[in-house]
Image 1 (cartoon, rainbow, N blue to C red):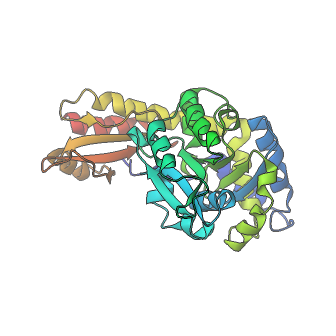
Image 2: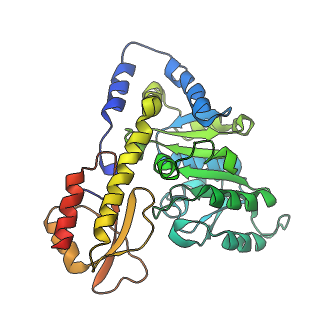
Length: 345
């Protein structure tokens, strides 16, 4: 009954097999191999658009390097106040941008509120040397609270960004989970909605260590290769990262994995909704659940072997506490049902 994180689980068998195949023979290093060369065409096919693609090993690297490419040192990056780039990346975006300012914007369930975004932008007039210059908007899809922006919500936010000539970045650590929820195409959720650069995540959805930075305007990526090398993310044996991404996209594996994770989260949420002492605190649009439970119940769950992450939130008190539950591509229905049995008992 492990629901601490989708990072807690291992690697999809198809991806392990691809890594093993990539281990045969000797090939050109530093991304000159055939697998890495094929990726750009594969991503272009999936996104229905010319792209520049750069594999990296971590989501923090993908986000920080993408934002550094879009944002000058005197710039401001607007994000949700609880976004991963703002709360969980140890200042990496600030470091790689050379000191750009992250500006947190409020909004329910981890979604940037358009009105709050406009207020934040109004406080930073362009051309005023006394304030950081608004340069980039970054949106997390799905959000840190498991919600998914609709296409209309994305377009409204990117429209505000365009009015102020901001670039738009998407943190897609759980991109596939959001895509399955919306039932749209990758193009519709990215460049057609106004996104310039995507951090495309695979690690949380069955890869070993594989992410990619995807530029929908390759001209924006002219110096990204240097940034990646300088940061230590140009792997000499890049084929092992690229092989993961190729296998992840092959035959719809990424969407099947995400669909299973989402279904397990929905199963959990449906069961929790029937428990009087449980309170769901955010929409369960993808594979994350935020629920407030009595502390005594949390103790019983731990004793039964359940793993989950405490997530303190406003409204918690001496008797009740919020936890986060995350379903993965490998979560079993019987583990969900056993968790619910303990909660219901």
